[in-house]
Image 1 (cartoon, rainbow, N blue to C red):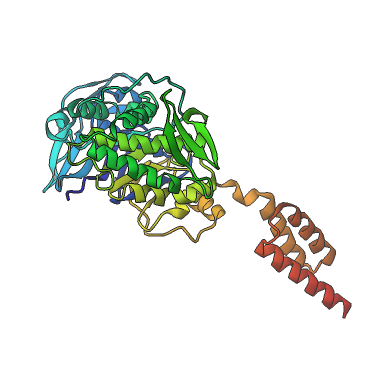
Image 2 (tube, helix red, strand yellow):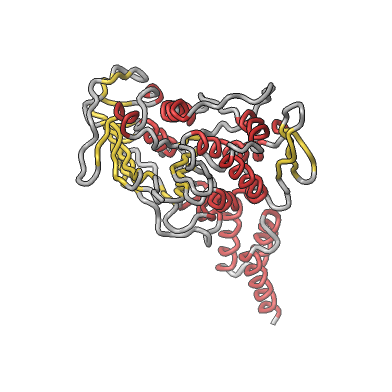
Length: 417
């Protein structure tokens, strides 16, 4: 089976980047770093490589260049724009000067954006933005789904718009369509995907929530169950809506952009890019989401941005890409870290991966420092007071608190001898 995935992204004089080269792994890629370092810009840069219709979302210069290296049907391709392709007439006012191909590389075909429809249309990444709430829509019946050619055109041309929430999807219509079609002889792949989704839906949800699809009634309102209570799709909490939206969008994309015989989700390849994967999700949910998506879509490549240390602690080796804020040079060469962060605590991930600088000023750190200062000067009363303040704010089983209490007891015992 051929594997389709994105290998690298190259950006020069694009938005805030003077130069960025970033490599991706074939499965999960978590892009993490401080606010303002350009995580979403990475996804936007990839989206621009496949269609020029949304260049107004970004800032270019006359000498800008950007391309994506990828493997498609086991062949190496490079798609995007070479230098001197864009006429920069001001912010959000760019025009195409020339369809210059990206810089050539031996063993890899270079394709300019205007050639995507003829040479690369079936490599069609899915972009999912941070706006994943489900607003109420009344569904009046089954709706005819677009044929393959139209679907491919839609996904290729609206990637950037989808990333910024300007191309809303209608997953409720998708659910209703499946309600009408899954028992038809001609819907073999759709039926297999439907039951595959129902089987794994509970595994994506928090522990003991028993998240499941129940039925679609004659009013054509999909009904779900969480924690033993039935509710309509629009009544689901923001977290459940977000996960359901991601899931249904991926199934819809797989079924809409592949030829018949290649639409089974458990076998499908390709790339899904999601901005702020952790949005609206409880930390317990974030721990399990990576494995849940991987179990449902085992051959799909995911490139996601996140602010969540809990998501990063669920990542495996070669899955976390750490971006730093580098305003002076603004030159980056990035690839997935070989580290696995499952043994790191939340504060360590926040400070060393995401660049949160205020952790050292927390009350906890101050009180711990004060306690050790009191030990240094052998002040029993000072240590007692520091422990008292620390007890008010930290977990009862905190290991440092246990050590300090033991030291306090030792100091008291010594003073009584």
